[in-house]
Length: 214
Image (cartoon, rainbow, N blue to C red; front, side, top):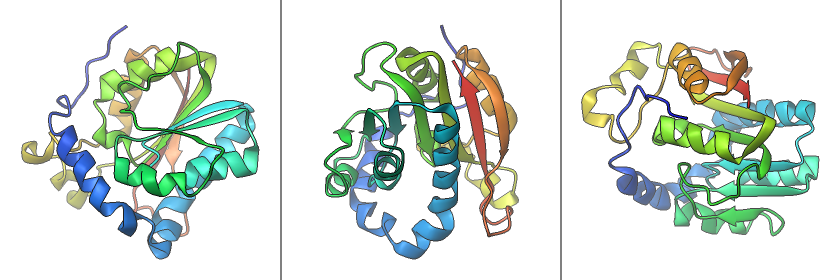
C-alpha cells in the first residue's frame, strides 16, 4: 500500500518538534483553546460516539486535552495519546493517568496491526508526512475502523501563503480535494467531509473535518 503525498517528506520534523516543546505552555491558553480547538474536538467526540470505538489513538495529541476528554467522557477500553514532542507530553501526563501517553511520531506509532478502532487527529496532520502517516493509520486500524482528521483548509489568500516552498518542509495543508485523494490512496474510504461547526465565521478558522473508514 502506498500513497503519493502532495507535500515533501517532513525533513524538518526535528525543528517542528523542538518548537512545540517550547510552545506547550502557550498552547494551553484558555481563550485559544475555547475559540480554536474546542469545536473540532467536539466534532471528534461526536464521531467517536457514533462509531462506538473502544480503542482509540489521538495522534498529535499535544498537551492531551482531547485524549483526556475522550477518556473522561466516553470511557473507552484504551486511549493512546501520541505526540512527537516531549514538552507537550509532559503537560499531557498531568492531565490524565488513564490515557496511555506515547512519545511517537505519526508515521511510526509503535502499535500492533489492528490495535485500535479509531484514529483521530486535530490540527496536527499538516506536520506529518501525509502518505506515511496515513499508511500507518491504515495499519493500526481494524477493518471498518474510523479515521477522523481536522485540518485547516488553505483556501484563503493568507492560508495560501503558508504553502510556499520555503515552509513546506515544516508544514503543508492539503486542500479538501487533496485530502480525499490522499486518504483514498491509503485504501481508506472517505464517508464525510465538511467544515467544522464553530461560533466564529468559517473564513476566520477555515478548518475541515474529513471522516473515513478502513
